[in-house]
Image (tube, helix red, strand yellow):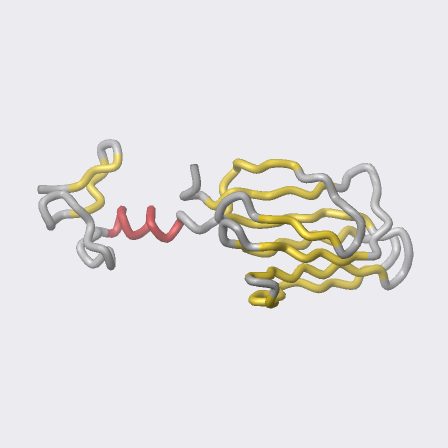
Length: 136
């Protein structure tokens, strides 16, 4: 028996169920599963607070900030916290005046983003949470 996603078979054994480790998933299913953690086109806009503010991930996904520098050597730094311990500090960027800083960091549902920055900003700025592909 095969497990189907629409008309595409994704598992070819196990009475129609994928194994816990996905060992019986065919190439279509493996491709689908590997894409679940990637950014989707679904997002929510967030309100950017003062430098040093924290934000909680509403689901598995990515925090994304786009902000224009208004002076030399302005910066943005993302740290993801779990139980108040930095578990993932992915991005710190310094930019020259007039340049755009675009930073993203993955976060699991419930993890906290600690965001510090000195970027001045402009009209094309945004701060959002982008849901992972497998999130509803």
